[in-house]
Image 1 (spheres, rainbow, N blue to C red):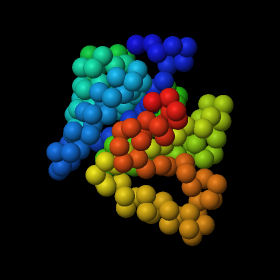
Image 2: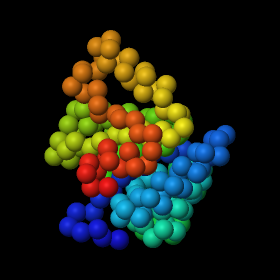
Image 3: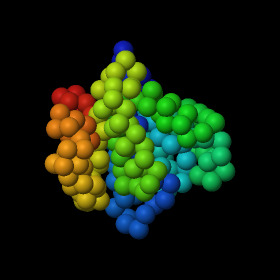
Image 4: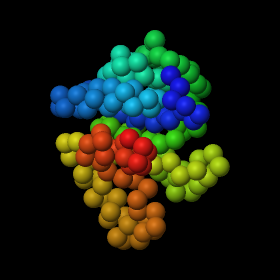
Length: 191
């Protein structure tokens, strides 16, 4: 699916588990459908399980572009999602993240665990240091409809308050309470 001269794509960081709350799966499906409806391609970790699978299935069912990136060793655990627009099998986690970052112009984190946090912090660090191709600014958004990310957002503010993050970099990671708000943070005035 081509939305014009420059394809918009967002990397969605999310869990290979469903979590304990039904709302997590609901949010993943809602985001997948909405991105497809808006003509925004999805780049994700490539697994067919957990919130990853729910989000990818919803985006595909809505006719969206969905690109998965999964390391060979995780294909055995998370089982690569078949039937995507594209599926990239890569050597390791570093190659996975690098390809996901280069294919995307922004990042959105759904509820998730250590892997989700690791991906979002690395993406934010790359933005802070100007490491994305050409030093491009790429927004990082915590999609937080039910308050899951609220403690992390408070900790992030504390890091600014105690001087570990410069005030000028405080807004690299943003928190959105709705999909509409997340899209506006990712693509200002275009959603």
